[in-house]
Length: 267
Image (cartoon, rainbow, N blue to C red; front, side, top):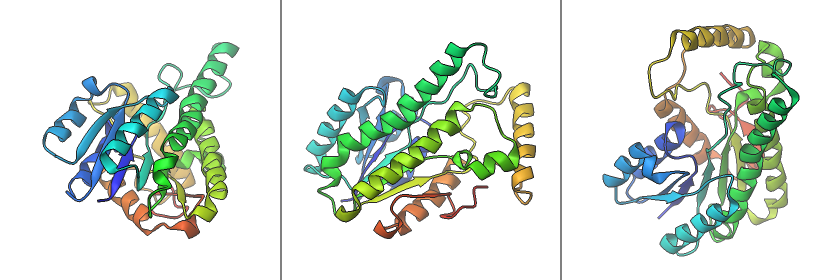
């Protein structure tokens, strides 16, 4: 039975990965999140599916990740086929600022370090925690969600410059993926960094300010990709596209950074 671990599974793209993968009763799906008791949508999915396991884990707490790997091993017999690193840090307070607009040096430093701690170090700790299980699989696929904003040509071509801690940390995680790919190439692993596209993961109606902000973002992205229609993907569509890319990827592709289309088309 194919086994999947998805981090950040309580909402959005992570929740949709759990939903789609659990529809195949041959799959064993583990949804990891910081606060399972608050993950109502994930728990609702679990109630309706016998193949979903919800496990507490925090990307900023290596011990919790190691404990989660132990719990997964108990169910699978010690192996894991797919690890999907979806969980990530996104700033809230300073998300609308560019790199020159932070109120002080400490705010900038704190945000960059927080993003790096979760989006890079947290991913490394997650991979390392599950590596012994992955090594016992014939599949050995490790998928890490990135963003097209981690591509410098997108930033330079669109002039998109707000929330810098997110693309900066995601560019770093792309290199982390490449480092694992090279280190474990001889063992038949497939490491992939993948952008989900522009996805609407909002759980409530947008405010007027958020609507205006999105319109401005669309204009910037269309400067880079004039043919983009400006319509965000649903989590369902994004995950469906990514699953197709993941299914087709193999050891020959290890270390690649691709879009939900499986290439360098980000929008």
